Amino acid sequence: DVLACVAGATRTPSLLKTGARLEGFFMMEPHEVAAEALAHIADGPMWVAGEGNREIAARFWPVPRVEFVRRLSARNAQMMGRVPQERR
Image 1 (cartoon, rainbow, N blue to C red):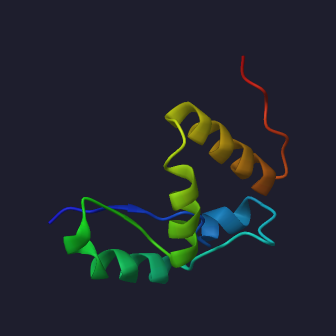
Image 2 (cartoon, rainbow, N blue to C red):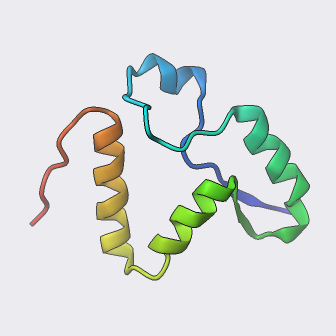
């Protein structure tokens, strides 16, 4: 079996080193993501780890791809303490 695991925000050492503002964001621990991915490997081809991530994904999936990328980019910019740039 092959599974693409959408991890969402995961509290990795690399993320913590960025100085991102993580308060108020749904975060998973790396071992939780890995355990959930392995538990759902037969449920592929894709699995979104974490109930909170699945709830967020369900709100985004009906959105057209370009709008999805814009929203996700804005949220990530907010996490990193940056203002998202407007695209033309």
